[in-house]
Length: 501
Image (cartoon, rainbow, N blue to C red; front, side, top):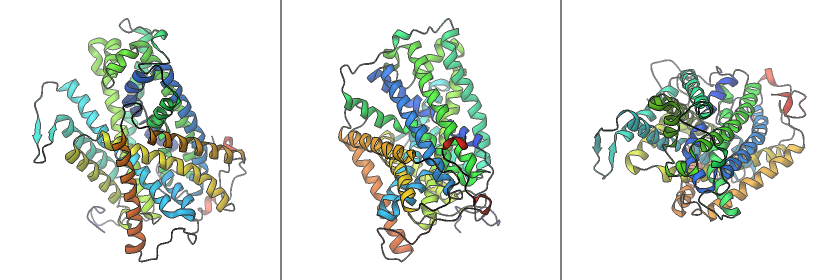
């Protein structure tokens, strides 16, 4: 085993360690407000507060429906790490195996490559709040200059890796602390405008148009496509199925309750913040509008409000590292990418995959400098993965009807899954064909995203042909589903999702 996976002489466990509960899954899902912080300013400024809230509400409702589908599939694979990327691969490999690999790689893109931009934004917040007059900079031979925000970002990426590498309980413990800070900050942000004399709430500050009046349905769909990665992300709870104490109940509860929690936040926070500041102020300050809000509420103590926001970035980076690493590990275990990534370290986590994840993001920061284009490109991969995972629910029902399902949704959920698959596919198509409608990316980002996805096909081919020395099978049929543990081998008589809250 390589040095990336070992520390001392203790052997690596064969299975991931079951130490988490559904509450830990919900804490990791608290990373989702970061997506709201990063996109609210641009979205509200362009299409108005009411329109943005409506888009987020609809997307969160879709995420809630999808959480039911993912709960059933998670119960089918209680010992598999990687979440929906694994479900997508299992569902599609019997029809077109590379599509499953693309789904898994796209999912990794969506989570992992967000680390770079989150790190830079965190570094910028810290610099503006605590070191506004610094002149720290390292000039690289390639012409890119690493200022303090980039140095903080690299340190944050390495820290997120370390907190995950030495066991999931360490990351979960830190996440609980930062999660508590975030909840306090969100409470101040939501209640403050109604109590503080410096911030007054006025519902007339919300409109349906923003700066884009008039706009057509394509604009709405493209904004849905752009912001869906910020609302669908509660599926991250499924990535830890192999580490929950009760993989069936804990995964199901974490998925559904996180989806409802995020739905509430994505409606309430924009409503209050836009009503307190106004669309023009937020549109003109799409990054630091949160700081302005805390200044109105807390005055000279605004920095106290910024600390919870920074805490949210810590959660987001730990979660992105954990999920990205488990995605690579899960697809390697399934045979969809190079074998080396499918190893656990002595702490029961996918050390090689986590380390690979960390190194790629550091390289992105050093070489590219501005990672926002990669983040936008990764959105295509992420939505592709979610859509294929939803489709996998239908395929697994059809191809493997007799497999034990501790959670079995009623038949109407197959129709719901088909509808969600069609909606997501439509949004991806419109987003790809109209990348410049919002000014939030263009053709180059779309081409970059497609190019990154194609790397998945290369790695899948290398695994099959070079490492496994097997003939290329475009449709894999001889890979039976792994049986469940004997403790959960008897399926519960579940007719709908309400039996597992």
